[in-house]
Image (cartoon, rainbow over the protein chains, first blue to last red):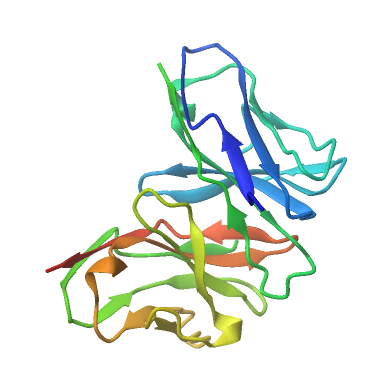
Length: 114
Length: 108
């Protein structure tokens, strides 16, 4: 199993550009989420999904869109990039069947917006 | 509102010394708490959770509901413990609320 994969690993955008961060998992997990990691602020939840076709906002959703058309994929779209979105983005997945409630994280995407 | 606080951004100790990473939380109800760790160039991974009451890599953490704390402890630090540590609690639908993180450095 590859676990949780993310692409790209690094990305530089200009202000106003749009892009999609890809996330996929092969563990048949129902739950997927996106976090951003900023120094001194820990990880903050952007959007999450409890299953295909169902998404909801987290703590910091502004400027981001998500969709969940399949169980495996959960892309994050930046509509019009801003310097404040410079961050490291992590995708995570977990299953309600896992009593440990462990979340599995991807390797991250480092995004710089100039 | 649910919140997790890690008061130390940086913590530096010598190899062989005891380590304690502090974590305090605010949560209405019975919290489920975790410690996640991120080693250099590796992805974030679960270290331990309070429900299992286990010791992983020599680390333990006890939930103290009276003090609303979940401090991570290890009696003898090792160089390979150097990493970023995050305390987190789970909030409905498996959403994690993270603390700010503590960067632990073990000096030889």
